[in-house]
Amino acid sequence: MNYEELVKNQAGKLIEKLVLEIRNKKAVDVRFEFMDNDQWSVISVYMDEQDNELALRLHPGDSYVLYVGYYDDQDELLEITRTLSEEERKGIPKSMQKVMGKVLSDEEGLRVPGTLLST
Image 1 (cartoon, rainbow, N blue to C red):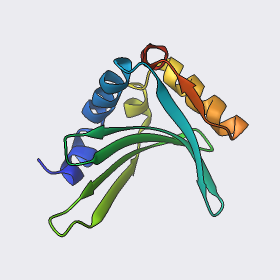
Image 2 (cartoon, rainbow, N blue to C red):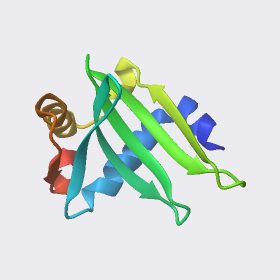
Image 3 (cartoon, rainbow, N blue to C red):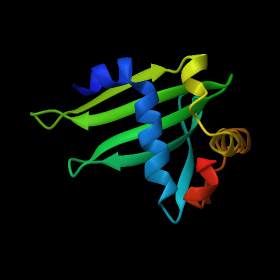
Image 4 (cartoon, rainbow, N blue to C red):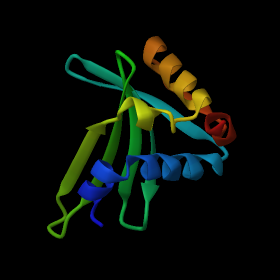
C-alpha cells in the first residue's frame, strides 16, 4: 500500500503509529508554524531510514490534518494531507489535543515528555 492509500484509507492506523512513536520519546517538540495567513501546531516523527515524515497538524477551528511527506524515486518531496473526520479525531489522545491547542493559541512551541502526549 502506498502513502496516498494509507492517508486516505488508514488514517486511524497512522495516528496510532504517531502516538506509539512519541510515547517512547524522552522529549517531543510541539511546534507552532505558519505560512501566509494560515497557522497551525504540529507534532511530527520521521519514519524509516528514508526520512519520511508523519505529522499531525491542528489548524484554527479545531481542524486536524494528517500529513505525510516523502521522497519519490527522483528525490522530489511529495506531500499528502487530509483533514480528519470527527470519528478519526477520536483516536487522538486528549492530552495531545490539549497541548496542540495551547501551542496554537499561544503561538509558541513547547517541548514536553512523550508520555504526556499519549494519554
